Image (cartoon, rainbow over all chains, first blue to last red; front, side):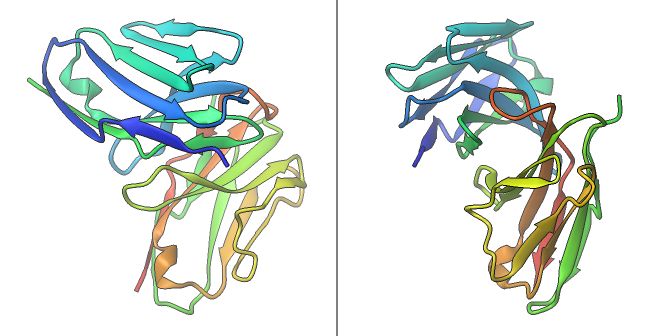
Length: 109
Length: 114
């Protein structure tokens, strides 16, 4: 069974700092790796999807990388803003998605 | 484009009562998912529909949970009878097809079982 782990569980950074969120998964037989954002009391918003044949995806200040062989993905956020404060979830996709428990990010103004 | 709609947004019931949640996916999306998210955890898939057929219900507690998607559009998830440990957020998501595609999530229904 796929196990997805996210480190750290929580992170506080001052505004403007660059940061990296980590995700690891145990089974490399995936179709894709997805990163989501979840705001308190809200559903999930898809941020980036990396197909298994790709190495990275970029959207604005966000960059996600995928290393299937080592079972790792990272989400890089450049020049963090207070509006980036949320919980970030990664999910390894096969026939369905297996989620990690998330990293709660707080960006301090 | 309208997103995934869910209702109700909040529900409080007592244990052993029954409850039902409704989901309307994005128009044209063939695949619909129900997830359970317990506080502090990531979402866990309960059931996946492709049109009106079940693709995966391996993690659905079938003794108390049931779900249907009769016309391949909207869906209902029912719990009967509810237990304290069913307190969670129930998320519905949809995608155009299934494998390898972005899933779009609704706002969720927050259930509290007392």
